[in-house]
Length: 121
Image (tube, rainbow, N blue to C red; front, side):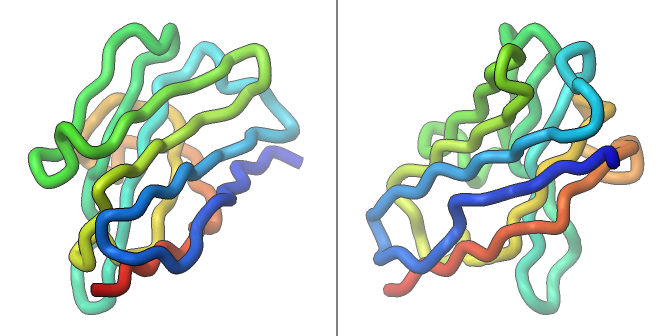
């Protein structure tokens, strides 16, 4: 069964760090660009970061630039999001997605189930 499974979310104090992982099973995504999105209560799903299939090129939302780093290990079929200097406004459910490098979530074909990140002030 093709699946993207996020992990690594949790509760952290402002200024802290978390590392999210997205493990792909059932198929390989090594030839696919991938991205991270997030959705906070009452808000639309928001682009966070994206990475090309090679991992050489990345892009970030302005709100996370300089604090978050997207990376991937194609040998492990895993996508990562290192989140540093976390702020309460980063609180959201974080989703990984595959199939595009776009800011637009509708361009992605595959989605994980999400992992909750809560940042306390």
